[in-house]
Image (cartoon, rainbow, N blue to C red; front, top):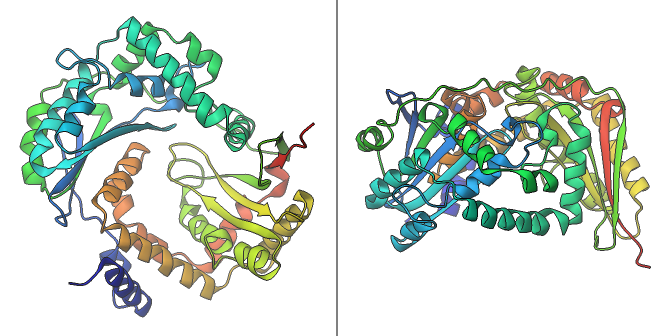
Amino acid sequence: MISLANRVLALAALLYAGLVTPATAAVYNPETLTLANGMQVVVVTNKRAPIVTHMVWYKVGAADEPKGKSGIAHFLEHMMFKATSTLKSGEFSSTVARNGGRDNAFTSSDYTGYFQTIAKDRLELVMRMEADRMTNILFNDEQIESERQVILEERNMRTENSPDARLGEEINAAFYRNHPYGTPIIGWRHEIVGLTRSDLESFYKLWYHPNNAILVVAGDVTAAEVKPLAEKYYGKIPAGELPQRIRPTEPPHIADLRVSLADARVRQPSWRRLFLAPSFAWGESARTYALEIGSEILGGGATSRLHKSLVVEQGKAVSAGSYYDDSSFGPTNFTVHASPQREVSIEEIEKLVEAEIAKLLTDGVTDEEVDRAKKRMQASAVYARDSAGRGARALGAALASGQTVEDVESWPERIGKVTAGEVNEALRSVLNAESSLTAVLLEKEKP
């Protein structure tokens, strides 16, 4: 039997040799259908194991909350595990666990998702329960107050007690000057405290409808098997009247902003710089593929320019890189970051990163760099096909953020067509220090 590691190496070799084309090598090959009530269904067949991942994505997230009511989307995610008209509080998860599966949920700025991974013959069970909580959640005052304390403690653990998370919250609040992405997904503490039963019920009834949801089923299953189950459980739920997803427009960024946080708990200082950038659904979206490649070249791992220069050659940084996520429903950012060695100051590491960016913008990327980056990225898409769960997440997140199945399936081909000139043009349009936000995390001296 050929091991997964050997398959990965073989696929990479074929890609580099040009024997496997991106269009055929890096696709999930999903089957899609739409129920009569408007619910989109996506099936990714992967027969490596007799299990399935069942996911429901709602096209609503923290950025859709009423102003002054932050945290509703995340709070509602918690309440979805409470009682319904047919299930007791906690019975959903205990039933999944008792049948050998696992379940969880997540909230982002643009979507909320619920998933279960379970044996194929238990698919109908989780689909029935998921369809039930799409419409039948019971909002009990006592349970709301209990869950509020859980959420506040979650905020304490993940944000209040983490200097890096606290800085991240301040960065977003300063960076997004008019867009709701500046509000934390978990919500501001004082607004979480003020959320009412009416707030939660209204948000649930406004957004949780089948025509605002995407069902993704991946694993040892076909669309022919999923369709009758989806029609049986989700298809009988009436479509709802949906509001428009109206969001404020982010204005041009014209000032160089700085955010700094010093904390005695910091053991590793860090530096980062954010630049406003387009996404697939916002701004100059045609540049997104070129920016993905540019980020890979500048800071995408051990072979990137930043890592080789600051970490390997100069030995000035513990780590250095960049990242760019173009899948959001609104504006996004291109971020460059570095963590200095103990004897190196934040000021020095900032100048070193700026020098690398200046060199990149002046000299540009080369055809060879672009070719290598594209092959690495296309190879990673091929590897992703081995994981049924990854396919479900990739497709669900894309569809919930305004993209199409074709956008996901054609990604390797579109990446393959990007030229060095387009990468240089995209980077020069975004990496403008005069309209960026620089953030530093520092170790505060103990008294």
